[in-house]
Image (tube, rainbow, N blue to C red; front, side, top):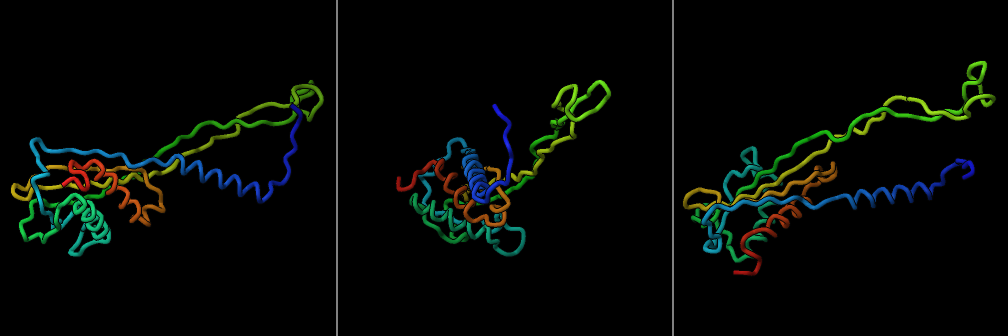
Length: 207
């Protein structure tokens, strides 16, 4: 293969490369990982009403956070689609629902030695460009680093039997999230709730 010349990269080529990189990143995106648990002997099909706990894990003050409001809306849609009716918390509902969101940062990647090429060689009189010796060689040129901070988020929805104050079912969706998703979480919350309720013991429209 002959030598290649490297000229100026066109703007169109850069756009093509950037677009390809975005497609590759999108292809690497994965759906949330779902884990569910259910109490022994639990029977959710016998319940008819539900409400939300007064102070869910997504609130940290005397007010209802935007995250809580979004989750209450999403879960209400899912529960009503399964025949449950939303009532006030003091109306003694059959079920209570609680939320919890956790985030954790961890480091991925690593570092290692980098090697690069150089032209020239060692001739009989030492270093020279061309002349005697190898026209091209390889040498250590420092270290490369591919270390990045990744944020993992986990949403847990717990369904509680009000009569004995015990969790009878819970579902957790966990996933690595981007900075954009952290600053604009509504879409991620919607998807996480949908994925969790896809594993709910009572299917939509089954009641």
